[in-house]
Length: 160
Image: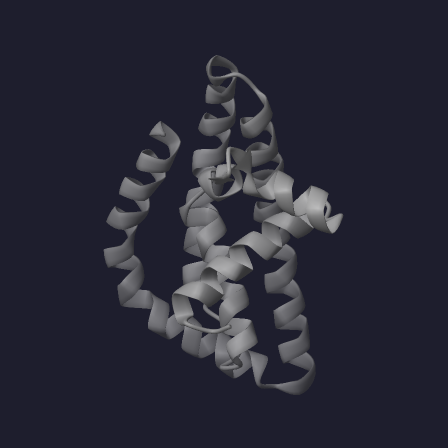
C-alpha cells in the first residue's frame, strides 16, 4: 500500500511541470514518427526504452505477489523509481499515433505504472485475476498482465 501511495504522490507533484512540456515533446515525437524511415527508428527506440521499464515492473509485481509482506519492501524501494521514471517517460512520449488501438496501448502502459503493483494483485472470487486468466486461458503471466490492463482500459473508455 505504501508503494502505491508514494508513487501516486510523487507523480501527482510531477504532473504540473510535465504538463507544461508534454505538449511540446508529444508534438515533436509525432512529427518525427510521421517521417517514413526516421519515424520507424523513433518508434523502435521508444518501444525499446519502454521495455527497460516494463519487464522489471512485471518481475517486481510477480515477486510482490509471492513474497511475504516483510520481504516485499525492497521490491517497493526498487520499484518506486522505476514507476516514476516509466510514468515520466510515457507522459513525455505520448501515444505514437491517433489510432484508437495505439491510444489504448499507451493508456495500458500508463495504468501499469500508475497502479503498480496492484493491478497484478486484483482478486475475483477469492482468486487473483491474473492467476485465473493464466489457468482458464492458458496465458503466460505477461500475457495475462497485458489482457487484464487492456480490458480495464477498454472498459474505462467504453470500448467493447
